[in-house]
Length: 494
Image (cartoon, rainbow, N blue to C red):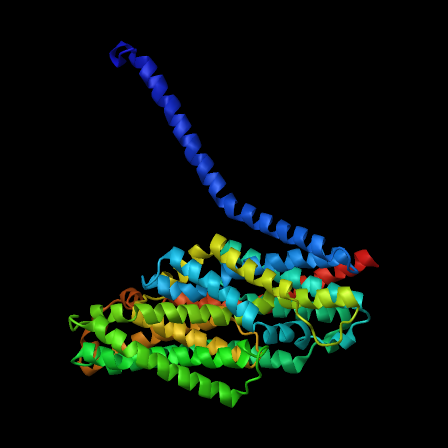
């Protein structure tokens, strides 16, 4: 039938019907898309529970172990959604990595860090915060660890849902502490360990910011402000890459190879220095070839930092996996040991399957929920380019590595954000200093309205205040939730 034979009223009806169909499709897509990631996360947790039930059926308290495994998977998903984004945010924000590339690198290196070097911090989370000997029985200890795991996961999930920048480390430490107090009173808490951990929460973001600012100062004074920027970059970029490689090698030698050969700190430092020199020698001709023919301007320098930034982001993911996997599997490892053997006062033996749950959950959580937070860290706190992002990633990696050496469960979120703020505040200070030296600040600032001066700030103050608020509220909130959950469990069991 020719379209001219159709009556106009029929065409109008058809247009309305097609419009309804189109609107319905859009609405369905809008509703269904947000549900895809949670549905996949639930499927992952169910699969973990099925696998645990299949493999642990012959053990004592098999049901408890299965429930703990599911909660561990739930917590790991939240860590991947919340914390891991901070590792890759700078590289994505600087356009050195695509979102897909960032997720792929993070998945590989997070898993490697968790499985190879995650054991020491797990011991601190599970046994260092509360004294197991204060618990009345193995059952009470299991209930406390279960409450800690569930409360931390619930708090991080809630905070992520409302967009609050909280620390998963703070959450799980608060959960363990709250359950311990509910189970055995304030004497159950190892306040010496808690004071060290609390000090690390203050020191680590400040240290991350200072180190990031120091690296940016070094890059600016040694490369950016030089008359011949390209020649300066050919000299110093390989040095920066060597520093990064040396730190990674020392860390891997000290912790990652301990199951094969015991290496002390002095030997690990020597290994790091040697490997750093090797990488410096290898990188030097590569940077020289890459810089050949480049124009003498900052835009050219950014290209030279692409590879170092990607490698530093991978290093940070490895260090994060080693440090933060404890948040997911520390209480789970303690529950497994106490449930299967009845022993809850001895040192923890961490099964490989427990570490795999933590690594897989973190990676899957990043894949499902990470992109939004990656954009926040990479773009919304302060403007990052390749050089600034490199300083952030390297600073955060070094800080996390030092914390993991000491067995302190620091917050990689606060370290990374502290490094971003360090870079931003240094840029503000450096810009003001240069304007003052050029006698511009006295001329310009009085002419600017208060709102305009605020707009010209290079760091968003609202993010700084929200992070401080999150630091204050997370530990007590997780502790209260954990105490309530423990009381409910003990009431139901009693």
